[in-house]
Amino acid sequence: MDYRATETNGQATLFFAGELDMAVGDRVGELLQQYGGRNHSVTVDFQGVSFVDSSGIGSLYFTTKELLASGKQVEIVNVREEILDILSVLGFTEALGITVGKVGETGFDAKQRDCI
Image 1 (cartoon, one colour):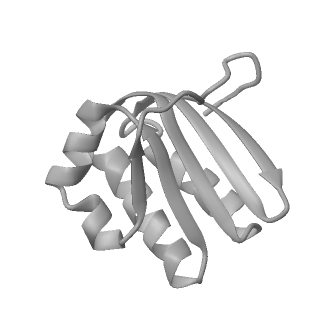
Image 2: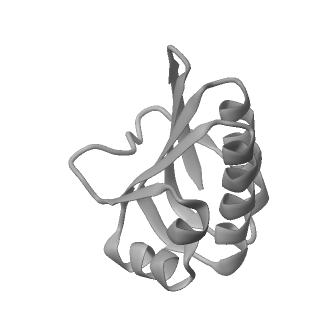
Image 3: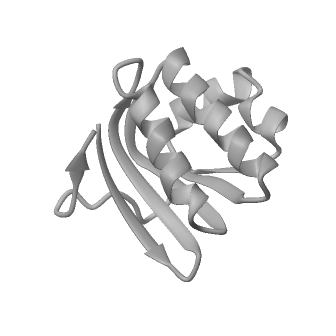
């Protein structure tokens, strides 16, 4: 999985691309914790995410839960329809009370990236 991050005025945005699975789930959680820990809010852009499995969602869930408990704001945007369906079936958004939005016009820029 590739990622890119921006930080401006207490707002971090993490752009992910690839598959969020067991191989990278812990690293995604670490990145979310790292950027969320030093910013007031975090937006996670999923436009480039093509696949998720239960371990990847688990890492995302538990890290998001920790950030919310510490008073941070978390939003997940640009989620593909098939991934949004999985998150809905699992009750992800209802359990956390966060906003999850469908794919829009902006997202991952492959020119600037790091690999997990």
